[in-house]
Image 1 (cartoon, rainbow, N blue to C red):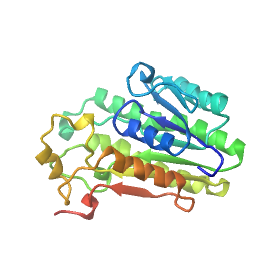
Image 2: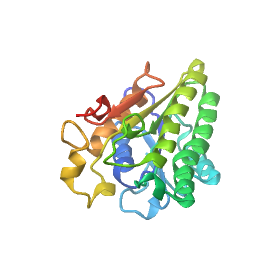
Image 3: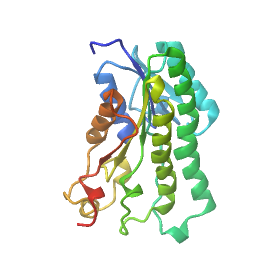
Length: 242
């Protein structure tokens, strides 16, 4: 990069979309703090001069504090945050349990809340703005009866709501807040599901790649005049029935 080297935090970074996002930012010259429950034990990454790995449950405030402290101590600050960590449980609505709801809320909402508070606090202290990107789902605005996921969408809808609220609250300080809403993505989480069914969930009869989502995240992180936006990467599925 021609600009001052920046530091970004990526949660849920050990595999799939999260790992792709880490690789995309490293390739662009960023310092990256990557976190997941056991990322230091995975084969995905090794620590380096530009990459720090932090183990822990991002839904715990103590983990969020450790991640933020690592970014500040090792790289001198926080310029961006990608709230990628999330879980998805697809069931008929009547089959969801209290345990399902607690798990979804813990990772998808608490996992966004605590680290975002710390990142914004640091960005305000630095007085140079910053970016936060969350990961939602195209199913928030365009539900599909073939893929019942009403309760996870309570949490993903919350991500879209907080995106708009924070974009407004911190606009005067130059902090931009956006979200990416993927459709079906070819990741380890979809392995074992018939590809013909997955492709049928988008009008272009294709699934997105990890790189497709990573490119959208990078764009929103660097797009200086884009804030409060939900960027749908779903092959046009949000346009309605096809």
